[in-house]
Image (cartoon, rainbow, N blue to C red; front, side):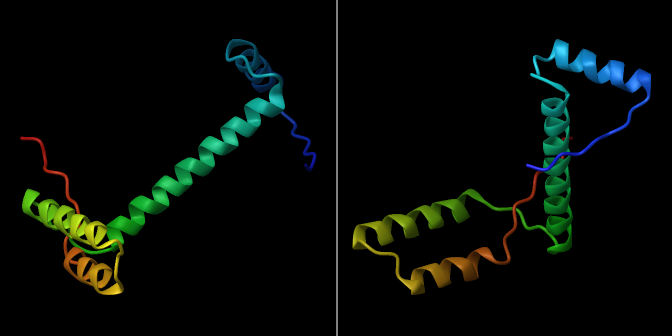
Length: 105
């Protein structure tokens, strides 16, 4: 583990100390690590959102689509194996269909 020193104005240090006391962090380092983890998670979430937006237009999935996928899985499991052909067929059908959330009216 690497050590890092951070300089804070008195007001910010008081805030960090209060967060440590109020939120049951063991010390300021635990609080800072938690903030950094949350920021990393937020960045990963944003990256996933942007990747989704750049992936093309969405197409609504229907219950029939899911029924077909379930039937494929059941067939592959009954056969005791998932062949590359089944996986390729499923990917080919799923490629144009991207989930979309209906807008509330």
